[in-house]
Structure formats: C-alpha cells, structure tokens
Image 1 (spheres, helix red, strand yellow):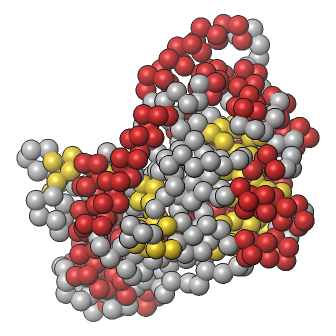
Image 2 (cartoon, helix red, strand yellow):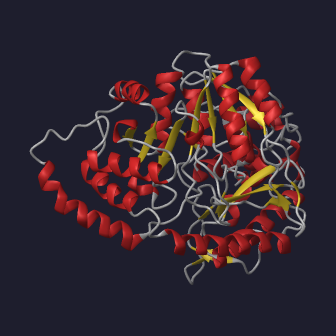
Image 3 (cartoon, rainbow, N blue to C red):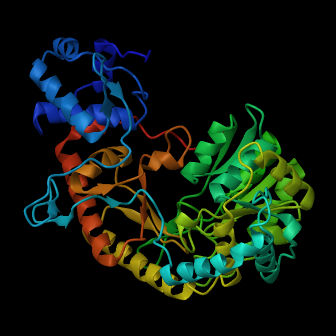
Amino acid sequence: MPISLTPGSLARLLGQWNVGAAPAYRELADVVRLLILDGRIALDVALPSERSLAATLGISRTTVTAAYALLREQGFLSSGQGSRSRSCIPSQGPAHAANGDGTLTLSGAPGLAVPDGILDLAYASLPASGEVVHRAFAAALTELPALLPGFGYDALGVGPLREAIAARYTADGVPTTAAQILVTSGAQHALNIVLRTLAGRSGTKVLVEHPSYPNALDAIRAAGCRPVPVAMPAAGRHGTGLHRAGGWDFEAMEAALLQQRPAMAYVVPDFHNPTGRLMPDAQRRRLVKAAAASGTVLVVDETLRELNLDGAGSTPVAAFSPAVVSLGSLSKSHWAGLRTGWIRASEPLIQRFAAARTTLDLGGPVVEQLAAAHLVAAMTEPLPARLAALRENRSALLELLREHLPGWEPEYPDGGLSVWCRLPAPISTALAVVAPDVGIRLAAGPRFGVGGAFEQFLRLPFTLPPDQLETAVLALRAAQDRLERSPQLRRTLPAPPVTAIA
C-alpha cells in the first residue's frame, strides 16, 4: 500500500502557491509537479483526495479536480479504479495540441512553432553515423557463420572486438593486449560491473567530481555506495565574454583522497560531462599519484574522448599507471543504439570483472560486437564530419544564448556535446517543470550533483542543428519569462546548497 500524504502536509509543501498569474488549477498543478520533480513529494505517494485538499486549501473541489486531471494528462499522477492518485514521473513529455498545419504553437511564445512533439535537451547524444554503421553491420553478417558452431556466450567479449580495442589503446600510447579488455553493453554497464567488483559493500566511499554525470551518480547510489563529491572550480571570464574552463581543484581532490580514502574514484577527464573541460596531462599525472597514495582505484570515463572539438592534445590517464581502470564506448562517437562499451584494466582485474559480470549477464550480442570491431578499427572515419557539425552547433548555441538570454553565463566547452550554463537565479528545476509547456525537455542542474546542488546551473546539449537550437533557445526564453510571471514556482524551490567535500 503506498504512503499517503495528508492534506495538511501537502498544504505546507505548497506554500503560497496561488498568486493569480494563471488560472488557479494551473498554478496548483505547476507547484505539485515541481514538488514531484524536485523530490519533495516522493514517487508512488498517494496524494490527498480532491475533497479533503480543497477543504484544507479553502478552494473549490473543481479547482483541485482540474489540477489533478492536468497532472494525470502530463504523466505526473497515476491512479487506478477506486484508489487515490499517486505521484509518478512521465516516461515521455506531455502531449500538446497541434495547430491545423501540423505544428505546435508554444505557450507563452507567440509565433514560435516546432514540429509536433518535444525538442529533447535532456539527452546529449547524436544520431548514428549511418553509412559507416550500416557498412559495419553488413560486414559483421558475412563473418557471423564462422561463429555459429560455438555457444555464443563470452563474458569477455568476442576476440576481434577485444583485439581492435586493444590496438586502439596501443596506438594511443597505452600498450594493451586483448586480455586486458572486457566488452560490455555500453559504458553504464561497464561502470556497474566495476562498482559491483570494487565497491560492493554498503556505505563504500566513491570520490566523484562535482558536478558529474547523472547516470554515474545514480549507479553509485544504487550500489549502496556513498559519493564523496569534490567541487570543480568556477569557470573564469574569457576574452570573448564567455566563461572559460576552470579546470579541477586538485588540492581539494588530493585532500579528499588522502583524508577520506575512498575505495574508488570516478572521473571524466576528457571533455567532462557536463562542463566540457579537458584535464591537462600534468593534472592527470598528479591525480594518478594521489590515487595510488590513498589506495584508491582510479576509474576513468573516456566515452567523450573522441569528441575533441578544438584539437587539444592529451594523454590517456592509463598511460601514467597500469592500475588505472578505463571505460569507453561507441555511444557518443558513433551511436548510442550500438550499446557497445568496454573496460580496460590489468589482466587480474579483468578476470575479477568478468566473474562479477556473469551475475548480471552471460555476454553481449555477437553480431553487434562483430560490427563494433569494424567501427573501432576505423574509429576516426566518421569523426571529421561529425566534429565539424558539432563545432557549428556549439558556435550557434553560444551565439543564441548571448542574443536571447544575455543574463545566462555559458562555459565554453573544449569538447563533448554540451554547454554548462550558470543561470541568473536558482531556477533550474523550475525551468525543467515548465519546459514541456513550451516544447522542450530539460535535465535540471541538480541531476548532476549530490544533495540538490546546481539549482543555478543547466546543461544544454548542442547535438541539434542550428535551426532547432534556435527554436530551443527561444523556448528557454519563453520558459524564463513564464517563471518571472509566476513567482510562486521560484519561491517553492529550496536555497541552493553549498557545494563541499563530503
């Protein structure tokens, strides 16, 4: 039976929700939706009945009924026959009524229209490099018959792919054999295997950069581990008016490693997600030494390494120590639908990872791995065109932000797929709440932090073409304008917490 929220408890969470900036039912729905997204109404909690909430708030039952109906339509409430409405998160953005010409006019933005649907700015991913991927699968199908007499299970991965990945590391200055490679179903799968092996006990400390990749933070928490966040310094003002990368705070990182002595450290030194920063080689060497001194296993996420937009040079972290565990994948460079990743580590660790992997699955799909072997062997083939398009998109997004949202402070990314923006106020979650109403979907800043941090930040991918980025930025402006007209949404947000070493 789900937990129930009393009318008085919900009223206290709502605060001063009705300020007259919109119809009362809409204002009530907006604030309840914000409370669900912000985590202050947990998921699968039964909300008060329409009659009891109306009596507590001193409003008509019709208002509550309309608010609940809107939340159900948007996917934030679910209810079965004879049961109370329960809080939930929608699997996709809410639907919008289309105009007669098949376009969607955005609320609060007269004249602004997008194709029927939502522009998704929550994911930083590219479409497939189609011809290259298709050719790789065609080649894989010709090679498949040779493997059909076997069982098809291989916890380490098929030989040709492991050899191709090892050759790639060797060419990049990190001598590697196929025995040092474990193929996985993407980098997230790889991280889960590493966590299960190295930090499987409840309460185990794992050092992370702050901000960090949300899915990695989720995996660390799901493993029962305790994140140890180390703040990244603020970006400094660049000569062009943009903010330039502030690097990593290595004094803080060394102090956290030596004082907290975490079992594992998870870092993204190559075009860090979400900031796009690139860690210099001197800092990589320093990080390796500090991890060794503290007895911490250093796990390096290299999934964005190939997306080097400005041609800056860097050495793989594993070149500085054989103890480094490296994670990679084809998701960002080629296509997320390939679901092919890998772990590079010492042979003894790879054997431990393989043993842990068999508790999750018995191996990956063979055809996909054969195709991935061709893609890894010709890793750079699709990159020049993709990097050129990303550079154009990055320039377009930064210019659009300067023109339409001059109060926002974007950090210039050295590579990767997104821009990390400082907002003029702590409104990130509120923007994510109203975003679907103006035709976009956002990942709020606190998704990238621990303990609700980064309410004044937002990650914006530049994976869409310039014309769609323009539509998205205009929608962001419309969302910001709506928040300025609806101050109750901003008042319900907690003050941004101080980012500190835990």
